[in-house]
Image 1 (cartoon, protein in one colour):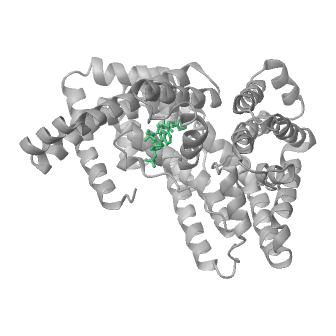
Image 2 (spheres, rainbow, N blue to C red; image 1 turned 90 degrees about the horizontal axis):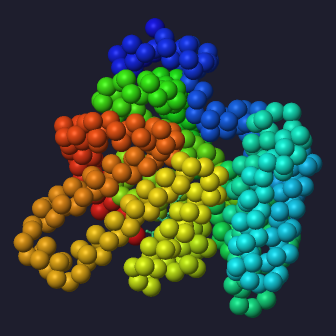
Image 3 (tube, rainbow, N blue to C red; image 1 turned 45 degrees about the vertical axis):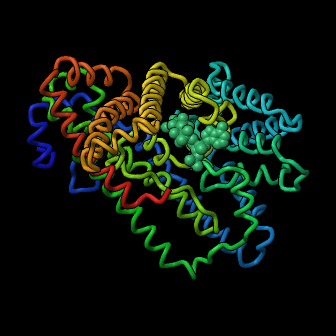
Length: 473
Ligand SMILES: CC(C)(COP(=O)(O)OP(=O)(O)OC[C@H]1O[C@@H](n2cnc3c(N)ncnc32)[C@H](O)[C@@H]1OP(=O)(O)O)[C@@H](O)C(=O)NCCC(=O)NCCS
């Protein structure tokens, strides 16, 4: 037996099958427990981290500290030049050249100061990432598929960066010397966020870089050590899950998912979303730590998924950098939520459609987007209804605060069940979503469905209490 007792208890019937079918890898951590390599994103970034990225990120830290002492005024240019050099080493001359070319094209189009043209340009550049002929050319530059993927991911994330510059350029009221090509290059090639984000808008970047209040490594050593210690804990926990729980391997087998008990199915869903959270604590935590040392304020790290009880909250607090980007450059420009219900429906649909297209536009992403759109719309509609004076007065008159909170939690439990389902579609594909839908809501009605909703009702109470206690805004 190579699994921990609890998991062994759950999976004992299927372990050999898993081992045979999913090429579990021999792990070096945790006393030889086998490792599940089926979460592509985690395996990909951990592999790249070990191979090269950690070295270049440490290099960035050293260069930034030295530049802060010796040439503080020129630090943005030095860091931009370092980012280009690191990109050259990791992605090669052609990879760096194509990122530079996209940046240059976006800059040239921005000169027309037309929002529409800027967006069309960004969408066009994004589309070129999925043209088969272009893909083949890029594959030809590299020896491994992983190198090609790294370029694709980098270009996808860079798209949001030059789009931010381009739209800000259109909106500037007076000529501003910061809206120049050298600043754009320094922004696009800022290395801590280069390959995978998080997203920081152009105005935030230049304002914070201008402040020059960077913390020297010496003065912030304790904060750095604490941040690093936390990151190592998150990484260790994520690795522990990958070595003990095998949820990604199980998710890649539909027959297995259909065979396990409903309790296991629920546990697997919980493990999936918690792993997703831990993964992003690490993937965004590393750049955030380096940004802090550079005197920049990174977007807050994802809020724990166990405290989420609504679609709206999930997207507001999970990837805050991306949410701010979407609000500023997509949602508000197409109407936002201050011009009536229809406009809000439209703006929300456009936002989710953009995210789905940005992620690659696969079928399962459109299902995910549609589910999320429905979820956000349903929540906003209920919120608007509840806020109308006559309903609000009746609720206050007839229900005690505790009863109102119970109603809130009951509604939130339905919302959370759909939120988890939509995230399972995102993480496991539409087939996984279908299996969950059938087993929990169709075949499982009424006992399984009501048990799940009952569990999520308690879960929502925790989330509501947590947000009332800790949330400032
Ligand atoms: C669609 C989406 C943008 C809606 O976000 P939301 O926070 O519920 O939107 P709201 O209607 O509350 O508006 C957000 C803010 O913009 C403001 N706003 C909205 N419309 C506005 C307008 N026309 N003019 C000015 N401000 C406006 C609101 O007042 C609000 O401000 P506040 O935060 O200070 O209260 C959000 O759900 C989202 O980001 N979805 C995509 C998430 C995603 O796909 N992430 C990636 C997953 S991998």
